[in-house]
Image 1 (cartoon, one colour):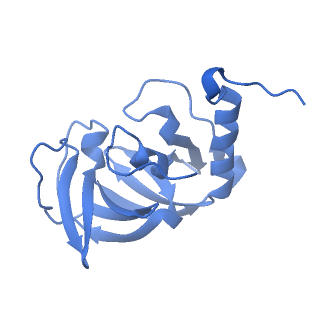
Image 2 (spheres, one colour; image 1 turned 90 degrees about the vertical axis):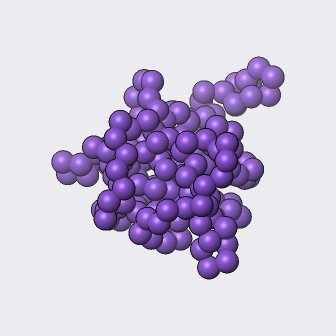
Length: 175
């Protein structure tokens, strides 16, 4: 068997693709949510609960996308506004604004979104590869594009996104 080895012990592009394919194959149900005009999906098994938005307690000198923290039944939960993180032009807080509370590793994190729509089950033939282009979301944090009838969902690898060094929230977990 001929295996390619990446320089300096890194991951080859083929290995990265196969790890992304393995992640996609292991997830079949996604929570669909809106950020601006786009619809995204995350692994439903990472979702602990969905809550209405409440103003969190701010921290001085934290990045703009980290809104602060809330006390959720005795657990201090950092709140990330994904609309700010993804550079959306307009960020409004209204009755549809919700916080999706996630379990990432041993950490609980909340993410603010414009609203949630439903839970969608996707089969492998409904998944399309993510094209290479520059966007607010690093391509490493995108699993695929899900096509359901006339809808397209951008499927996020929420664990990789939340554990990324740019977020600065959670120590990387073992995958």
